Length: 225
Image 1 (cartoon, helix red, strand yellow):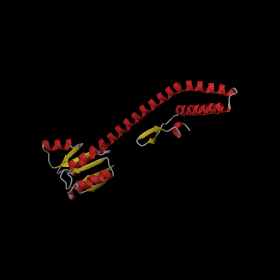
Image 2: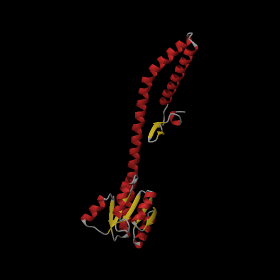
Image 3: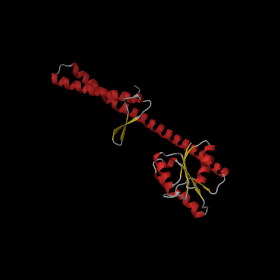
Image 4: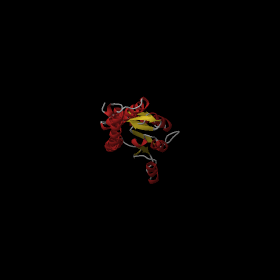
């Protein structure tokens, strides 16, 4: 798992790097809060470990910025603190941290906290994946229900329109009127084709229609072509 950790103490960074490497994580360490925020903003990672007392930005400031980031809710934040008073720990949690570890901390204790953090990260990922799958399932169900309704509500009047147009074309009509009837027939046939493609939707995808607006793609594989 990719991990970002920040501590202005070189010995603490070395200890964190060793424990993270032993756990098999792909870790990057920085020495101050400003560097930590810049690294996260550039490349959000699933796990961030922050010392509270750091130059430029302290760990709580970085934690708050992470929580305000578009990907921040997906990140587990572990704060390392030398303060273990009730108010201090309340401030850590209010900043949005998921967990904390007090220092000095033994490698065994640090390893245990990191293992717990890793489990929580994977649990959260599975939960988000399940929620995403459920949301897509509901969306697909809604698309299917809408398609059935459209087929019913459009096909009946469309069949009548095409039928009457065909009957009129079988009669002798003025050339200009015939051209108008042919246009009606062609456009009605286009509508019928759209309804058929809707009915064949198997894996609906969306495409950008206008800036900030999406529409269902009826031209690709999702439309059964």
